[in-house]
Image (cartoon, rainbow, N blue to C red):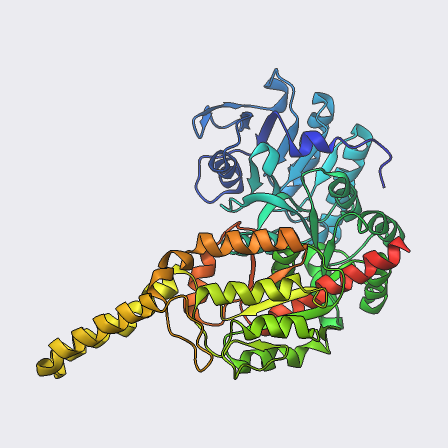
Amino acid sequence: MPSFEREFDKLFNPRSIAIVGASNLPGKWGSMMPLNMIGGGYRGKLFMVNPREKMVLGFPAHASLKEIDEEIDLLVVAIPARKVGDIMEEAVEKGIKNAVVVSSNFAEVGEEGTQLERRLSEIANAGGITIVGPNTMGIYSASSDLCCMGAPVYPLKGSVGFISQSGNLGIQLMGWGQRRGIGFSRFVGSGNAANTDIVDFLEYLGDDPITKTIILYIEGLKDGRRFLDAACRITPNKPVIALKAGKGSQGQGAVLSHTGSLAGEFALFRGMMEQAGIVEAETTEELVDLAATFSALPVPKGNRVGVMTLGGGWGVAAADVFDREGLEIATLPESVIEELDKTLPKFWSRRNPVDIVGNVNRANHFKVLNALASSDAVDIVISMGTLLGRNFWIENMLKTTIRPLINMIRFHTTRLPLFQLSILKGFREAVSRRSESNPEGSGGINPSEALQWRDSVFISHMRELMREEKKPIITVAVNEGERSASSHMRNSGIFTAATPERAVRAAGKLATYARFLSSHRK
């Protein structure tokens, strides 16, 4: 690998960017890259380089890099592969130290492309230029509002650093993350990595103060020992989550044709991850789940889980996965059971998972969560079917009043006045009995709790509880109404899983990382 000192700060926080191959033609890389930078809010200087244009996207066009009088922190190259080497020689003369080479048709396509990439690497190494790519989708940096990418994805700002050996996959996953409320600090699509290694960026993110969680999509490694050493240094301070592609023979062939790299034996890589304390994601979906989990939740002290569920079946579905994930269903102390006896109907399960038997009293939800989270016997809390939120409350009230009212008008007109009187009576009775505990049943919906069903109240309560108890609380959206509600909780610091199994899986990964940290401290 090159021995020169890399200037990553200028890569991720450039004051000026030159785009070679800048274009006004829609759909061309030379048009999409600067458009996405402008769309992302980049406020530094942009220099368009195209000898055939006088103006590109409203900026004066320069015939070459030599015509630009000012210092350039970052070069973006979007021209045919055969011309990239010559541009890199100009960049060396200009004193540029970082380049994002979007151009493809290098080592990933065969011997001719390999020769072009070798020349590109030699020129860059001699001139001290760090290359992202070639064959990359670009980079993102929250600190400089830099969306230097080949697709119009504008991530939420946050603390997740993402290194991907597939730029397209990486950008798509950031799009998924945006919809899940995951905030990103940096992104690098390493591409063919002509004179860089994934470890170069891993080391940078390990020391980066705005990056708290690191996720990786890996197809192959150039230097396994160096990767292991870097990971071992970082994981005691920041979680590193990795998805390894090319696990089987067919996947390894796909990796070779994609970036020209060798995937290597997966068993060896998995052993390396375990040794370094890297959290393994098995699918792209899980990589996004774990990014959300580790960036939002505290790391638990152990693997004992307290489960609250609106109905018993969800608790059983979750419990089935516990053994596989190395988790224990916490044994509730008598003091917790006695506390829950005051809140729940007398026929509740009186064990963990805590089935609240369809209780839709919001105050009771919070009481059960508080009792579980505050117990020394519980390290992690999973709440299923109680996320709900204002949309659920409104929808439920509409379904149980407005729709029946319409059908009473249509089919039972003569009974309409009595129907209305009965509804009014029930509403008044619910308000008057709002503070009563009903050991014989759920007690129904309390209309006076309407404000407590707001998403902001739920988020505030969960965040405060996690802050006080320093324990992760994972919510599960078990119906479409809840998933709609969870989409309103973007960047809220709450992790919501789509299924019980995914919640347990995330809890298991948190517990695994907790065990690694505990063993490392010893």
